[in-house]
Image (cartoon, rainbow, N blue to C red; front, top):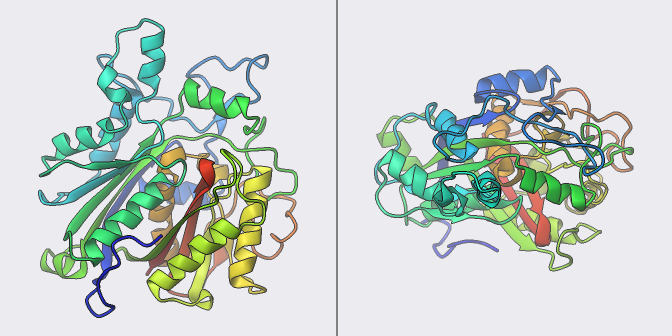
Length: 386
């Protein structure tokens, strides 16, 4: 699916990323996160936020920001957003807001069910956009996308489409999700959680590790960015979105849906597969996701050997925020010509040899592919430019 691609090639405009900030369990800002990631650190550790006894849960670990605190009955998500927005520079008043989340302030639904005083408004998915719009004084109502674990990648595609089609000069994409007992118990009941820290693309992987975090990326047209003297961190060149229509949770085994999304993104960006320098994969550490991704990349890149990496062994699976955080990190990859190590990767799965590495890898090229896939068979792919 291509969004709002109605204008001719000559009429389309570049989408510039002028600012990117992030908060995760591994780092309170993007620079700290990048440094610790390159040092092979992980934030996955025992959970203290809620009880996780072995009788009820398959796992007892996640990448959690320990000092997140609710205030006056509000969701932990509010504290997370406060930390994120404190890092943001000025956002134009006419910027269109596109938010993304999987479950928003779902922790307050837990509190409501247990009879505790709570801010019920935080439970609504739209509350993320409402909160940010009011906080930043933006004109108009924001949009909130909840499309499983591809939510923020789709939000970025939406923002880039609005700019390239001339419907917006500036778009703020903001994504956030927290680790709640609701989400944790759900993944546990599906037997998707690993008892030990996740091992993306490893032959002995047993499942994913949950994580929490948030990211915000300010997108602008090239003319607007130049006029305001904004930094140019990179570009969102193209995107592709597909749905497997295969199963409520499992992806189509052969990776055909993700391969179509990647090819759509390459077509949208007007790039060939051999122009991609590296791939930031979804890489959850589940048996079926990682196998599917390797098959999909083989369909696109054939026998070409290019660096593929996953950051989820370091920060966990941050749900609807994954695509935004990984895009921010992808811009760092292009800026430094270095792909980060895949934490937890020890014994390569078939097809991962020579592609995925436990060490950082040098890259050469101006474009990076980042992908996300989620329940319901949703696949999203973005092509980022230096």
